[in-house]
Image (cartoon, rainbow, N blue to C red; front, top):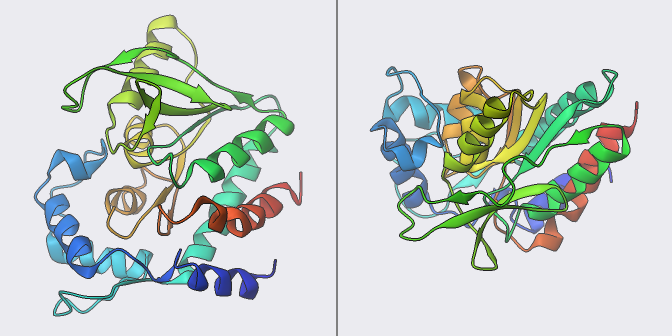
Length: 263
């Protein structure tokens, strides 16, 4: 798929372009981040300098949402060109890690099992095929944080970490599971990952801990873009994170082709 073909696909499936996430929802989340609501920080400890206006300006630059602060309701957008630029930057970073020699340690995780899981599983397979060691620390560990009201477990499916709730993988923004994974590695005296590929709190907590991290984020999830601006997240890819999983296939193929072309 060419860049232009991918662009057309992103717009047609609303992965980018006129996305389903409303302007009201975006602005509400930007305000919440500016107020340092932990639910929207994704485990990142961001500078106190970020105001609501700053977050909106960053999201206009990094994701392509409407920059006008007076546009307060209705349709909002993700610029497909910015999505593709970030996909290419992510691919280049993954390829650099995989092509660096040895057997790099890679940890893959998602808080969006109904959408982004398909991309993460494909990236995990490619990483393994090109010599990476896919990590699965703290598997089965009980996790009771985040105000869930009941215990959940860290579980891996095809080397992708998620939270399991009585047999069902669940959506989560919580950074706690990634913190638990890193703490387990530290407790055992084992090295941390060379690269984390993730989203939501899985990515934010890894980036805050100083682990090289690339991730995906929706237009209403500004934390990873703020983390990228502060140098804690290597690459944040703007996209709608919950369209039909099959819609991500061309994006995934484009990403993997760029990862593997020089390996």
